[in-house]
Amino acid sequence: MTRETITTNRTTPTLFSQRFLKRQNERGMDGLIVVSSLSGYVGSPRVATYAATKAYLHVLSEGLWGEVKDKNISILTITLGAISTPGLISRAQKKTPGQLDPAKVVDQSLSHLERGPTYTPGLNNKIGLTVLNKILPRSFQ
Image (tube, rainbow, N blue to C red; front, side, top):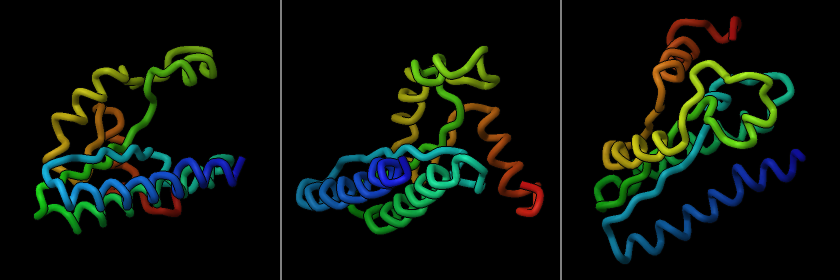
């Protein structure tokens, strides 16, 4: 599972981003949305590899955004928490607080694409990210 997680969440998006940006430098005016997770802000037991790959994606795409922001190419990292997907629904016994509708997340993310470099949909996610980054010291996270 660890190798598969790393390939899915780190290697594949990195190679895809490189290829996408090479083509877009030739065409111009396009966008790329990278999906990260609130887990990428905290090293948590049982999801450490997953969290590390999501942190990697956040840093990678933010750096790429800086490289292309003056070339009519938009890169946006969306930082997600609970999304109402079949996978989450099948694992959860009840609805997760703050769970977001996937269609709304897509619409909101597309509307933020040109603003880059990051966007966190959902009030609960924004509050959680603020608490993790600005209020709680790392020793309490």
